[in-house]
Structure formats: structure tokens, C-alpha cells
Amino acid sequence: MTDNEKEIIKEVVNRTIEELKQNGMLIDIDYKNYTEIREKIRRYYEKGRKNRDKDIDEAIKELKNDEYIDILEKHYHDGMTIEKIAEEFDVSTATIKRNKKRLCLEIYKKISKNR
Image (cartoon, rainbow, N blue to C red; front, side, top):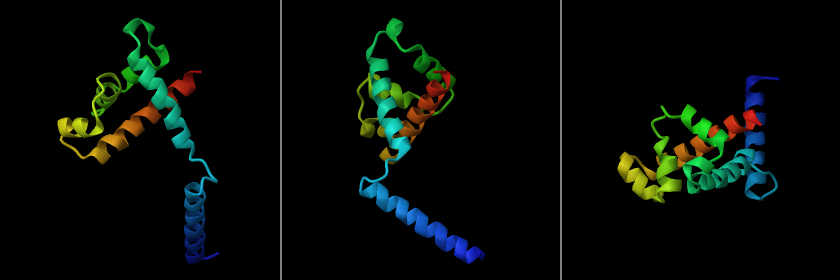
């Protein structure tokens, strides 16, 4: 098989996967995990410090040096909108959304490993 044929196959597979996702025939595992952990993080910030999920607490502590970690507290605890957080960080809303999702998925991976 030539390199050109491999590229064509790769492109066809990528297009097929995207079409399946758009038609609800294929679930993006990251989306499922993100939806699940988002709710857990929201509940984590709603509870008092003593009643918080210790695994999430530890995962957040491990990420304390991430320049965007404060997004989670600002959004889930303080109730700030993505737009307000973007203003505060002086970045686009897309940057905030992308990093919020990335952080949530990193926390998901860390707590999944512990269970």
C-alpha cells in the first residue's frame, strides 16, 4: 500500500467517524466522561470543605500549578460565566472552554485511576 493510499484511507475513516458522531451513532467517550465529571466537580464545589470528595480534592491539588486551574473554582463555586472568566484571564472564551474541559478530563483520569 502506498503512502497516498494510506492517506486516503485515513481521511475516509476520519470523515466516517465524524459523520457517525454527528448522527448520534457513535458516542465520543471524552464527551461522556466530561459530562459525568462536570457534574461531580459541580457537587464537589457545592459541598463544604469537610464533605468534599477526597479523590477530586487530591486531583485538584495535583493540578495546582496549572495556569488555568482557577477556572474550575471560579465557574463551579463562584458561579462566574465563561465570558467573565475569559475577561479576567484576558483570553478568549474558547480558551476558557478548552481548558475547563481539559482540566475536568484530567481530574476524571486521575480519580478513575484511584478507584
